[in-house]
Image (cartoon, rainbow over all chains, first blue to last red; front, top):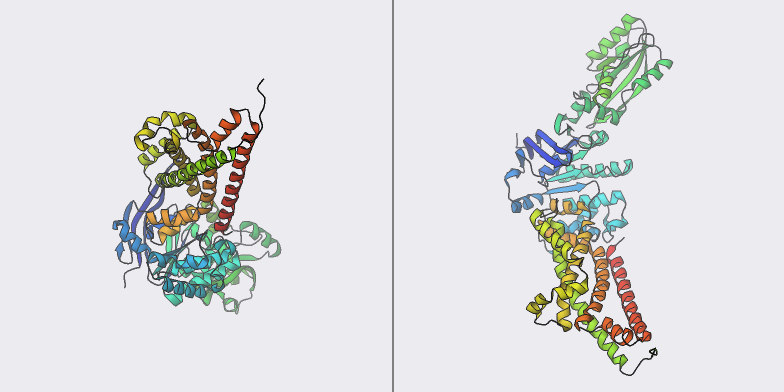
Length: 359
Length: 224
């Protein structure tokens, strides 16, 4: 297999603050592959912003090794670092555009740094503005643009020097949901059409769900879980990951919701999480030949990594034996089944308890 | 009882014009030289502070102490206290040359604070964006940050013009002439309030024009 485009090996970074030493990145090992969209998700303070800044050496690691584009970043002198940084684009939550320069001048700036002739860099900047869809704003100043437009300028500027890697630090966190989707679609085009590897920092699982091939979940400076996005969604192991998934999908009813559901649906409630495409939701197959009425009472089916994914809560009404058989069939079909019991004999959702106590 | 002689005597107009010329000479030389020194010192203050692009505690502390030490000294005391140095540097103890040297020093101290503040007011994200593009730290400081801080810098220099005008009035005490000296000599000393008011009116007009010009320029470069 080819060398990863970015590779962390036991990397740590601490800051000295007024409150004492803060370990922002704690023994992280991680490989990011050429051409993928890699997400890093975590709550604020989890260390993800520091992690991404270690890639272009805006922060320097205390220990460990970081290889980017075949170079050991931690050993590079400043001059070489500046050269490496020019091959890594970066976009920011607050856009960080140069307010005193026009949109066109902003986009052309990295090329000005590279001493590209003026005519050439302006032509390239116009081309990029066209690519991001705001060619008409070339002569405007950043203050005259909306948030989404500013981020498009940010993306165009980050792409000006033909980078191999684009770092996105909470790039959509300041945008409304619709604009977020537009910007994520644009980032996907950057990845697919231009072959740029994307490293995307976010605290929104929807963003990971929508765009990331793989994801790492960070908590207290550590990567607590990492893998294919679909696998992480389908079988999360860390409590933090489950909480994030729940915020994105709203697939699992909270204890309060379960209590309300029991009032209308006194039968056996089971939570069924699809583990792989297909099998889990063949409800009629699970109940065929058995005298069990299955009703979907809660849940969501959506897409992760462009594959169907979801979880539903069912009310199953029938003989205990028959209901038990349905549960067995569902589990055999690859679904993860949690029994919530009936209104008369309720069972607590153990994963939910984990979600709550973990925070 | 000395009678008031509120008259505009022959020759006053010429005196006023000469004074105006002396004032402009002092103010402009001071602003250009002191302004440039202050720009350098202020940028250094910003760059060497904690978390700065060239964070350097000893350099910051020395510059900071220097500015803090000189700036609060009343100019009329400073101008006399520094006179041995003035002679050493300019060869003149009095006159315009003798006045400009202490003015330049005082002006550069004030400028450095204003420049530092203007730079602190810029968005730290700009530094990060510049660094992420591969710009050197010096490039970020000089070529990216200063243009970003241009509007507050212009306003700072308009403010400084007025402060330096104030300094130039004191310079009259070492025989440098200027509007301040004109007002004292022909107005206050001769009990001629009329002359004082004329001098004052001229100063007010200059200040208004410069401040308006500064506001207009700052607005023009602000783009928002």
